[in-house]
Length: 304
Image 1 (cartoon, one colour):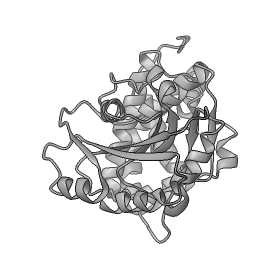
Image 2 (cartoon, rainbow, N blue to C red):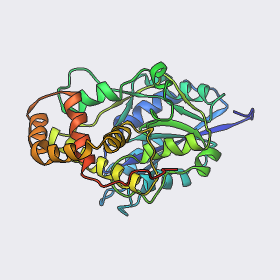
Image 3 (spheres, rainbow, N blue to C red):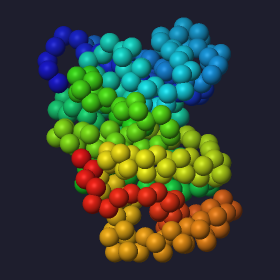
């Protein structure tokens, strides 16, 4: 961070008809811990067909700029649109179903970390006591301590809760060709790696309050894997993504044909087991591999 009299942190929230009340309250608590040379603005982009009934209240109570743009162009477009409406020299991106674990220190921790990093990822947490498949998978795969995320900083990038310098972001915005659900942050993290931009991971998590049913979560998983398959076919994703790395290994060894047969025979049964209450990360990963095996990807293609 370059020394200057005033810094502005623009908080960009990507929403789809979400109630932002709890998140806005938590962010408001965090403002009080900031030094006087930091200003904060909040922009919420909402792509839901109907505008939020609480939008005027959010503006009055928290000073939110609410952007209603029901264009159906996806999360990449939503994040880019809120960023373009911002004025800050630093941007903090949050999904609408995020809630800072330590709200009083949340913004301060980001502002301090931006002293020596272009991109900072705070992490994801899950509240205890939940029994959904989303919770079981998220707790294992997403609620990762910062020191472990640092081992693969770009592969562990998540757009759920991260901050970035404005100039860096607009050199590498989200790819708006991705209009369907899933893996826009995978591609974003990879682009930062190709550009040799360092990602710093810190312990500043936000709870993921997603309340999807098991069926809804698996439906989203299907969409995300299909989107990943499309990105791979377009040469936009490399084998840093572990699911694709496993696919390519099976492809090279000739075992992929067997996996495709297993997909026909067992994918439906595995989905039913996951919905019925089985909470196996291994089974979930195998389900995703079966889904990806349905995509034809030419061997030997360079993905750079």
